[in-house]
Length: 261
Image (cartoon, rainbow, N blue to C red):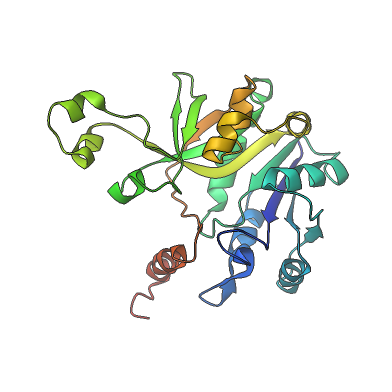
């Protein structure tokens, strides 16, 4: 089984211009992601798929491989599909690794691939979740939540708080206290696709719930397909807006023993 890792990196982000190459403690964000992807024991090759020569130049400068894709793409999945079509014909699995997850670990990537090794036929797409532990994340629409069925397949993804512990809330507990009595999961934006399924997905038009929530993965569910969800113990913090950089930097300083800086 051959596996290709692709890191979509868009310069013209509506909420954060030039986000993939913003400096985090002296290193561009996309470099953190690329270096961890290269450490994966499963990825045969890693490519940064970008819409801008500035990102391409930065990636090549630190020794990575970057490919310019069509500027007409509106989603990371579109960029991923172009790479899968043009360069991924010899691969069985294409892994979409978000370029704005600088704290991602190579073990997360390998966990996302593992279900295919256990039973290739049973999965079309796999993604990961992590237990929500901070109250501030519950109401943050940039923290996507997910609920699954008993078999570990996604029922729904939302920017809202799901599930809602109605009975506990009804009994008089404060909203935040009620959530301590149930398990909620934060979606980690990494996907492993069968290449054939990815090519099929690319032909589907955007769906109503996808557009309402602004979540591409809902297109899969709305078309009656399944997403396998795997829980990971490793936590990754995404960068959606400039204010998220401070949080990432503090975590990195703690890891490196640089809290005093």
